[in-house]
Structures are given as C-alpha cells and as structure tokens.
Length: 223
Length: 210
Image (cartoon, each protein chain N blue to C red):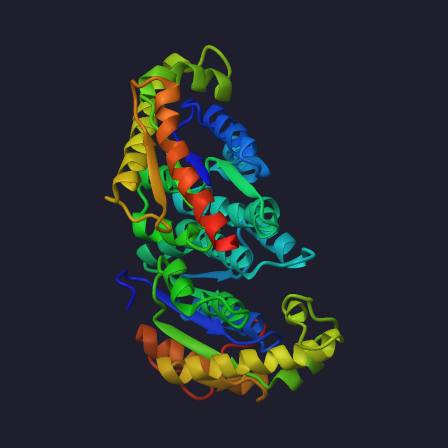
C-alpha cells in the first residue's frame, strides 16, 4: 500500500502490448463501479514531455539525459496529479511508471543503482500488471518504430525494424526478470482483449475490495 | 575545474584570471559559463507552467540540461587534452536544490555522472553585499524592496549549502580537491591557494604524460 487512502495501479509492458487501451478500459470499469479514477501516462507532463521527445530524437541521444527527463516527466505528474489523487482516495491507473525508463536506460549501460535512486521519489504502486507480449507480435502491431524506442542508437542492426526486434527482445527479457523478482501480475497480452480485460478488472477489484462481478451483469462496452 | 559561488560572488572574474594564469603555463583553456537553464526560466516566467515547476521538477530539468551541456562543452575539450574551467557547475545546482528543501543525497546523485572536476574553487561572498545588484540584473530595477527578504534568505541558504559542500557536511556528487577563497582577503592572496591546487593537478598531468 502506498500510505494514502487511494490506490495506484500500474500497467507495464513493451510497445503495442495494449497498455493504453487497457488503462482506458480499466478506468471505465472502475468508474462504472463507483470509484473515482485518474489516469496518467508516460510522456504526458506539461513541462518535461517536449524536452523528453526532443532528447530522444537528437542526433546522439544520451541515456542519462533521457533518464533525467523521464524522471522530470514522472515527478511533474506525481506532484500535480498522482499524489493529490491518492491523498483524495482515488484510484490512479498509470500507463507505465518507473520501469520503462529504467529498462531503456539500464539496457544502454546506465547503472541500475543510480536509476533506482533517481526514481526513488515515486510512490510504490499497489498493483503492477505486466502485459506480456512477444516482440515479434509487437512489431506486427506497429508501423514505424521510434528510433530510440527501437534501440537504433545501440547499433544492434542498421535496419530500424530489425533493431526493434533485437532491442524489444532484450526489453522483454528485462521485464520478464523484473516480473518474477517483484511478483507482478503477468497477463499474456496476445489473448483476446476481453480475457485480458477480465483479468485486469478482477485484480483491480480484489485490490480495492469490490465484490466480483456476477455473471450476466457485465457493463455494456459502450458505457 | 569548477568555480562555484552565489550570484554576484565574482566567479566569472576568478575563472578568467585562473584561465589566463593556466594559459601562461602553456595549456589551452576554455571558460564555460554555466548559465541558468533557459527552459526552466521560461517555465518560471509563464503563469500557465509555473505551477508545474516544483523544486523537484526544476532540479531534474536543470540536471538534464547540465548533462547535455557537459557533453557539448566539457567532455570533448577534456578528451582533447584541454582544460575546461566551468564558471559554476554542479555544486551551485546542488546548493540551490538543497535550499529549496530537496534531499541532498538525492540531489548529489543527479550530478554524479557529470565529468568530475579535478579542483573546485569556492568563491565566498556575503549575500547582503550582492543582493541589490543581483535583483536588479535578474528582475530589473525597482524590484529589490518587494523581493529582497525572500531572495536574501534564499541566497543565504545557497551560500550555506556551498560552505557545507566545501566542508564535507553535505554529500557532494564526487570527491574533488577543494579550495575556498575566503571573505576579506585581497583577491590576489585568495587566488594564490587556487593556483597552488591547480599547479598540483597540472604537475600530476605532466608526470603522467612523462
């Protein structure tokens, strides 16, 4: 528990694993069941998001600078959105938290201890769900990967798609190890959307003490 | 090398005097003015973004910019064998963030991956001697009366933070040979101790090259 009356639920996973879709569905589900919900996502801060995007697109992206800007992006959202919502007893659904920026930096050689200290201001989530997707499937779901997110600066391959495949495999292994170590909820993201949704909703309901939904009382998808 | 001090302490003058002295010893020197972060200044000046600029967000944005600048203005020159004197560097950032109430260990971590200076020269100055000029320069004339008490307290906290860093009472981003140019002595006498420390570093360089 994060020490406030609110609850923090984090969805992590590689690109195109369905995080933002399921964050939206989970928000709708919790609202339907009478809980106040706030949603937040990586790179959506007012001050830091543009600087973060520019740094990623730079000629020589520096993983330390990008980690610091990612921390600024998160700090801004924690202080302006997340902390007030948790103190007010709301549920916060976060599309990625500290782990995506930590993984991207650690896989570029930045020390894990330094990264953990950098992000130590972030409140601990009450529930982390890893949307587990094979990098091949991720590649099939997207058009043109962002060069930094594809790990092109690591010179794994000249071709951006091949680089994404190789870097995505490293990211997937990183998340797999973190998931085992921390006991996160692992949800196979290649399953039908309704099954993924149901697993996330059940975990969220258990966390906030809502009784399970009875058969036949499902919220209409349009709600 | 880094020259640190509060606004108005004369760090630029000290950095330039030391640079000329090093050049006379046959080394190429770059003086780099470590100016305030432009994006942070813009955010602070804009009513729509000011509220988002909390001490922690400002600290992270400034540290990110410091890393970008260090890559452009310090690493390449040092790698080429030149000497860089930063007219203010990480200590000033650490002391400012500390004065804004952030945890000093966390702040030091933000800067520990910057190139570590061989020598840090701290130019001491009393805030009350420089506050009027500093406010005029930053905010325009006529504002001193309105903002002076808060700004004086902030400058005093930054000056105390710099003294704590020099004395090892607060975690610094890296260990460095430190020289404090104390108040009250003539500038030339004050610089002698800085020159001694720099001479030792240059001699070390020379013996390693030999």
